[in-house]
Image 1 (cartoon, rainbow, N blue to C red):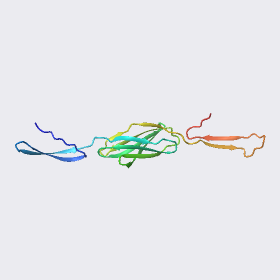
Image 2: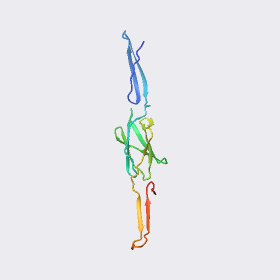
Image 3: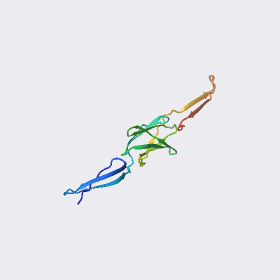
Image 4: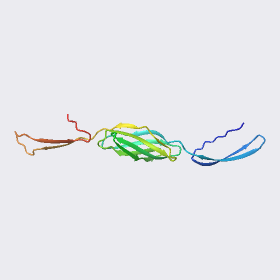
Length: 171
């Protein structure tokens, strides 16, 4: 016999809980206790967006995050070509959207990345790691040197220097 009242607390904090009970005869009693409500729920990641990646250009990465008490900090961790690792703080764009803009290095061929984040109660999580190929849109650099003056029947000597941010195809 007895009721089992319940209440769901929406916010973190310390609360005084008072319960007034009475029976059919009109007898009543008041009980008081204290409750400490803490947050154990990590932020939840939603849509992750990025544009196509090309060497030497800006790339935008964005993530949508929700949390019951509020997202505190977001980081963007990425590795270029499996070797160089970066970890940058991300800006809160609007409400639940967090965005970062980076310049893709000219030597990049592959970027592996993920977001990690925590809330006001220090609950942490990260989204799944993603891999994205980088397109090389930088033209090779070509410099040609030759004899400045040639006449008919003379052999010309040409020197060509070719460089590229990724590799020179010699075929």
